[in-house]
Structure formats: C-alpha cells, structure tokens
Image 1 (spheres, rainbow, N blue to C red):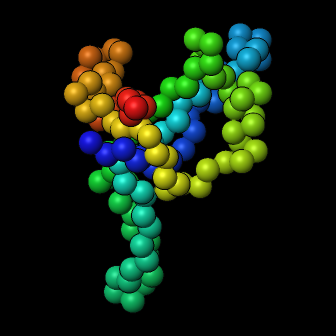
Image 2 (cartoon, helix red, strand yellow; image 1 turned 90 degrees about the vertical axis):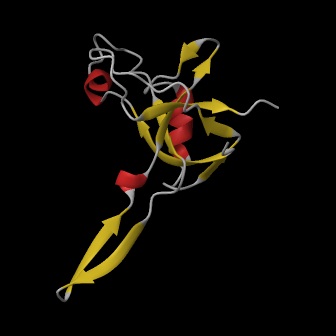
Length: 123
C-alpha cells in the first residue's frame, strides 16, 4: 500500500459556488490526489515541439475533508486558508492511501468511475 499520494487539484461545483442564493456557503470541496505525480514532458515530432503528459496513466483518488462532521465548503474560511498557500500539482501528501477495494461508483449508472477514496493511513 502506497502511504504517500500526490496533490492534483481542488475540485468543487463552480456553478453551485456562484449561486449565492441557494448555496450561500459554497459547494463541497474535494481534493484530487494521484498515486504518482503528474508529469509533462517536451518532445519533438517532425521537427515540431510538443508536450506530452501521463494523465491517462494516473490513478486518481478523492479526499473529502470534514470539520465537526461537516464538509469543507468552497467559501469556508478553511478552504480560503488552503487557497492562500496552494499546493503545487505533484506535491507529496503523506499519510494517505487509495482504497482500491472500494471504487467510487457513478450515482446514476452504478458503474465504476475510475476514482477511489483517499483514506488516512491508520497509525
């Protein structure tokens, strides 16, 4: 089991975040993590420079953080503090692993999404 994951991005529903009437505190924030860091590599093809990446090869996980049983929301002081010191893509995040025995399912189809929950490693 890998005990270090890598930061990929913050994710939240931007439409709900913008809807202050129905979502005054914003929408739930999910932290996207990967098992290996995302890489971009420059290459040439027929004399033209291109960039390639390994995004299709990455295994993604989701980390949903809660404080006092409530999800962190996109307009919360906690998320604003996280954004003041944003992690760079590929930053190691120690103490978490992807639970591959419990894939995340699509709510409508019931099919696997290719995502796994990120869980803390038990001490």
